[in-house]
View (spheres, rainbow, N blue to C red):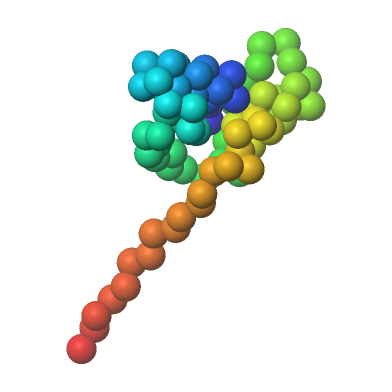
Length: 76
């Protein structure tokens, strides 16, 4: 799990490099994993500090499109 500051810094950097004000500079960014499984570690932080620092607490999170992959079995 990454700190929301890294996610937001990547957004600003891509916008600056590409000269595009869209989210992530118009680039598709793939994030994979189960965000409920592991919280990041905030040294000397409380549980509340850890929750506030997670990606889902970022102001960019509502703009994220969540897609799921499914495996289908064509058994005959």
